[in-house]
Image 1 (cartoon, rainbow, N blue to C red):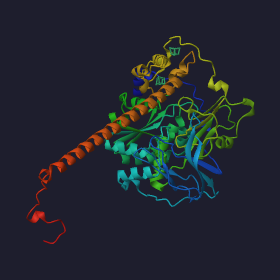
Image 2 (image 1 turned 135 degrees about the horizontal axis):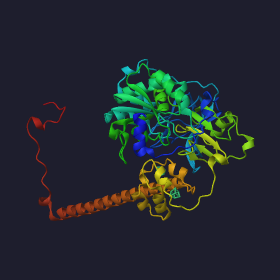
Image 3 (image 1 turned 90 degrees about the horizontal axis):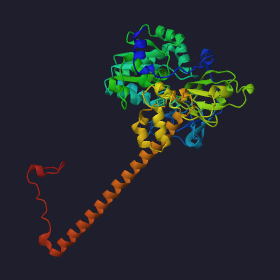
Image 4 (image 1 turned 45 degrees about the vertical axis):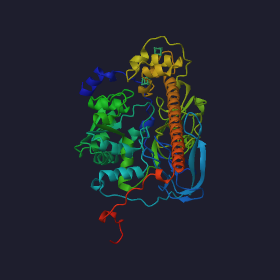
Length: 508
Ligand code: SF4
Ligand code: SF4
């Protein structure tokens, strides 16, 4: 038994679950490329942070890769035209989100030519200043492609500023049904390793470790072969256990270091990026290509030809499913539509929504895969407690939420919950625990926003009252001085004399 196995058996990561992975046959089909859609819908918010601001107008002609929206603020990401064509609308579309609420988007009608704009290539990325790599990654609009969608340039520069020692590349892909990272590592291993080497240079870390679950032997072999000439890059298999792909668990598995509850991997000298992000960084830095497409797993019993597809950002999910042969008539109506995996993905009411940068999967599941069963009462069996990889008491958090006591739920660790879904997956009463937690976190966020607004309003009102009081006092003092006559006016400031009295730039 290796160190990692021993470690995981003795530490917190003996928690977590072993869901059926449902990765094959999709994982075994070679990558395919989706043909050019007629229209692409590019939401302005598809990353963590502030939405991008449109930099084009309706009627503009754009080339593929041209920037069409600029980032706003430090945490934001630029957007680029996924193909050449004409901007036909800037306005609301249905968001790729469970709410189905509107989101602002830029709609492009393809001209069918798919012509790139002029790109700036670089023959030697290792001769670039690390900060310049960050600037190129930022200009390319790259965000974490593992689903987090955090702007990658911010993470790269943050790693450098925090003097991280170790770059961890997440090739875990622990979520059932998904296999796009697996396919990427099998088919573009050399590009992935090149991207990791560029990221090492950008972060200043001493070495990189690529963690891949041991249920992906082909990916491990391909990545090891590609990394053979790179002494600073190691490929390490990690045990197959959900949620191994969560940053904190991967750090624990590969280093034995525990990231503090409210901390970041940088607190223990580590920065974590997804393996698909490494390929995007390589494409951006070597060839100047912005992020305009990604790999997406299309899977589920209802899909005729499951597999992994390269899809332009902004393509409608139902067109991608159609490309994969459409739906199987013998399975009846789908029981659940998901963007992302079944544990952390988003259930959506319809697939007439666009693929965005963080969309790793389009799942069309039948009733057997969803396991549709009505929830029963909690029998206090503590299965959820044993399953939780963070060491929380999910049943107690759920009880507090049910009673409307969010503060008590926070005391029981609601904010530490990583929404992995292990507790709900294992609960014998089929209680949708993770949905309660999602809902409660949404309420907490709304409450925090309200509190911030109230505090800001109070501060502004206080500042206004103080200003009015000061103005009234000053007016009264001026009036009193006028009444008292010229002797009571304050004396003018004395004029300076000598050289120092000469205004700058005047002849002496
Ligand atoms: S696993 Fe389900 S039934 Fe068991 S204690 Fe947790 S919430 Fe209750
Ligand atoms: S969803 Fe939250 S409470 Fe449930 S197992 Fe995951 S981290 Fe624990």
